[in-house]
Length: 239
Image 1 (cartoon, rainbow, N blue to C red):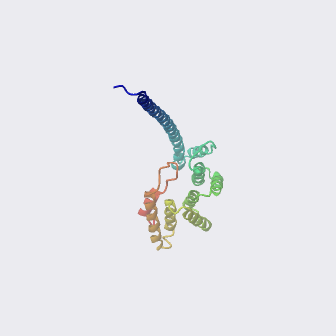
Image 2: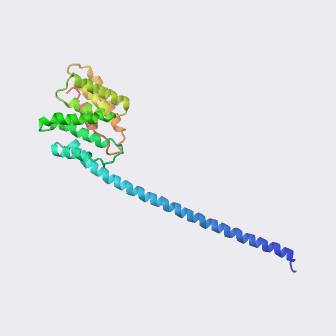
């Protein structure tokens, strides 16, 4: 039995519609795959770029750490000056940006106490103070207090400056463990004259040790001194 032309036409239209529907679906699928490939390619390129940037950063940090080590651990004046001069390079970019100036100040303060050329010590100290005064940052304040407390000629004016620096640092960042370590170190100097300072030393040095345990060390360039000194102080309170 033959279908009427009218019915045949309906079937034809239906078949054509199905064909175009399938064709459109396939086209959309191909376009989606193409977009996903493009997206994945961009992600891959971004990942490669990030890996390359991280690699460059690690290499730069490695160089920075070599010179930081010279400044902090060496007792040879030429090594310390080499580290200071390295960070004097204006092309050095770090995060945070104050890192180069911090280690320059550290080096100058150190030389102001250990330089064999004693006539240069005031010049080194002036250079350090110029840097510290130009940087409103608790780490610079703490650094200044550290070296004043190491000075055998610690006088009343210097003590006031130490206390002022520590107060500023504590108000700026109360989580900085070096603030509490140096507060303990300062009060430890007073124990012979004022024995009751022992409790203040204990409270602050224990607080420092606890805060050192939870400090963020993800950035290797940030100051991290003080933990060993705090432990040593706890073992030698009053000495």
